[in-house]
Structure formats: structure tokens, C-alpha cells
Image (cartoon, rainbow, N blue to C red; front, side, top):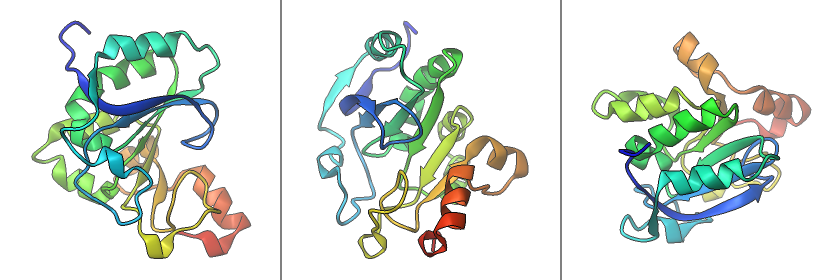
Length: 185
């Protein structure tokens, strides 16, 4: 971890129940190209905002909380700092925690972009869940689990990587079964 790049963040929520399953630490990365109208974190858009943090400091915070089920990378857009997040993601998985990543990119777009930016694909290989797609105000719903608009998907990343196409996570499949009107559009 000594050579690990520093991460530019907007902040850290030490315990969250809304950014993925269980008790999570959410790391809000700084910088986003999407600028979705109605974004709940517009202060994270500026790539020069926020502050730098050493990954060792984040790992120390993680290690101090034995109640954590997992870590969430949110933002901004974490995929725009994929190279800096890879060493942290590796450490998270070595600690037996699950990893959720929020991104304004779709899974399919990430696969395309990873041809030129392989670090995006590498970061995905550590993720358990990807919540993808831009926030769209016209599709906003407060009834959705872990996401803001119905176009966003809760993707089982590991199954998707094996299958070669998007496989929705059981969380979204159960939600769709219980409330078909909430299905991704």
C-alpha cells in the first residue's frame, strides 16, 4: 500500500444503511463528468474539489469498525478514479467485506471504456454490486432500493462478468417481483 495513489474524496459516511445491503462505510469520491440534473451530491462534481486522503487512513477507519458488512464507493463517480481505488478495493475484499460501486456510466459503457481504460474493468472485478446509470429526474422514485431513478440497475457484477452480459442482483429481482411498477425502464 506504500505506493498506492492517494484518493480525492468529498467525504466519508462511516455508517450507512442506504448505500447498499447491511451496515456500510460509504466513500464519496470527488469528480464527476455526468452532472445529472437533480443529483443529490452536486458538490462532488468538481474534479478539483474535495480533499486527498491516504488509503491507509481509510483502511484504518474500516478496521476500527467490526460491524461493517461492506464498503460503498459513491461520488462523484468512482469509476473516474478507478486506478486509485483498485488497491483499496483489493484490501476491502481481503478483509472479507462486500463492495458496492455507484456509477453514472452504464455497465455496457464501462465495458466499452475499459478498452482504453483497463483500470475501470479491473476495479469492477472486485465489486459485488454495481448500481449503474445516470440519475434521471423524470424517473426519480423514493421507493427504489439503493438508487434514485428507475433506469438505474442493481447489478450482480460477479455473475455478469462470468455470463458476459448484465445479470440483475437478487435485490432488484425481488423488488421487481414484489413491486413490478418499480422495474427498471
